[in-house]
Amino acid sequence: MTAKIVLENLKHKPMRSLLSILLVGVPVTLILCLVGLSHGMLEDTQRRTRAVGADIIFRPQGSSLLSTGGAMPEGIVKALEKRPHVAMAVGVLNALVGGVDLWAAGLDLDAFTRFSGGFKVQDGTVFQQPDDVMIDQYYASEKNVHVGGYVTFLNKRWRVCGIFQGGVLSHIVFPLGVLQDVTEHAGQVTQIYLKLDNPSNTRDVIGSLKSDPAWGEYKVYSTEEFTALFSINNIPGLKEFVWVIVSIGVVIGFAVVCLSMYMAVLQRTREIGILKSLGASNAFILRIVLAEALIMGVGGTALGIVMSFGAWWLIRTLLPASIPMVIVPEWWLIALAITLFGAGLGALYPGLAAARHDPIEALAYE
Amino acid sequence: MNSGPIIEIHGLRKIYRVGKVDVPALRGVDLSVPAGEFLAIVGPSGSGKSTLFHIIGGLTPPTSGTVRVAGNELTGMTDAGRTNLRKRTVAFVFQKFNLLPNLTARDNIAVARYLAGMDSKPGPEFEEILRLLGIANRLDHKPSALSGGEQQRVAIARAVVSHPAILLADEPTGNLDTENSKAVLEILRDLNERLGQTILMITHNPEAAAYGHRKLHMRDGKIVEGV
Image (cartoon, rainbow over all chains, first blue to last red; front, side, top):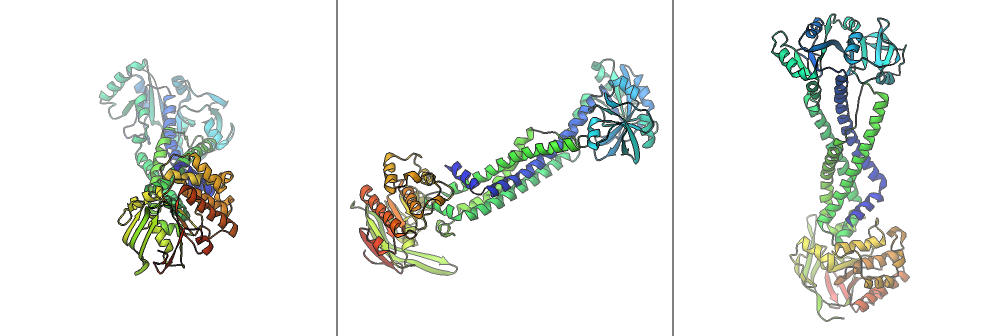
């Protein structure tokens, strides 16, 4: 019977109910999009790093997950290639060319192709001219650019010579020398990938590099170690930022439900008096208000999840390279818990106010 | 009519606090109502009739005096105790019907049963009452689709569905035309005669008051005639 009363109350003012559910759904979408973006960016980077096919990643001492930390002399590549068990080494220069996460890679295409199998060119050719750039299909789609078209990076127009299948290393690729010149990093690389004669030697090679004083100042990771570092906990400030957004979600859910239920309780003062005259206890009245708020919370969460799919589709369509968002179903339950917490909190004051109504005054309410 | 008193009131006073002023609503009421009586209470506005009903029905506590309703002493009774009294012992029929607007007539009746802690399906005797009330085919409509007379019949059905010891009808015909008023009053008399339902009815209408076994007159917070 409680459920029937609550459902009929929600149906009685459908616009109020739907608007409340929509407003509860907005912060849910916000939370899920933010989490989806964080996970998407990290997973995208992990995937593209793994696709290179290296066993070991070699980086400058000052590097961190989000920055290259300077550059290393390109000559190190050859020196590393001479180390025991190292079959191949290839150096890459990374440069931020747009936004907060759009990196271009400068590389020796022949060496990289030998190392990883190279890029699968879907349209056009590899580099032909000094102002050529290769981009993946995600970036081409995002910028609506075709082979022969032009893109601008680093204050210079570049001709798109080829569009390759994305998912390897970077969305944008330059010849190593060209990117070194344009970023004033002549003879330098920011990352070196090593392929071993046998992957089972990875621990030994890393151990020997770390114990060698000549290489001790550099950071050396196995690919598994390096990609495992890409988690929300390892990105400075990201976890805190997510919790700030979650807190905002709780506050918005609280405010929306509090306002909506406060108005509803005011409008239903007489009905509360009727229920009390029939013997409804304060707890019963509070339960009805809380149940209605929690249904709004559940509805808002469901709508928020649907809207997050909408945002995901929109971002994937408009910005497939710049913002690699993913859907994170594990967060649906967390979002539900956050929303129900906010909604329950928001319904508490109107619910207690309703429960405390004097039945005679409530029955006289017009 | 059964002989034992179901309501016994002695020296009942009720004072409302309005701002900083004490307003006496009842100034020493003594009353005894035998079980099964149909009692009409008349009097001008502000005479304390509704306040007396609110106290007997457990909507508000008395300020002083003793009030015993179906064996329950209301003086000093907690809010929860008065809520329990309203579940099963007393039921109201109001002038403005006071049905829950979002629920159908059937659900309005079911809510009362639910709150009284009874299973949701009424027994066959209740089907007889519905036939008596003439609303059996209107139960799936919401109050907005019912006439005033039909709404009041649903309100009566809701009041008696939990078999209360006492039915308090506060001007039950105040919002009805003559035909519906007569029908409602006859239903109340039928309930009293067939089921032995104790009924207290407030009315301004002398013809309505004539349906009761006895008539009390109230003025200035006291019973002045018919005790």
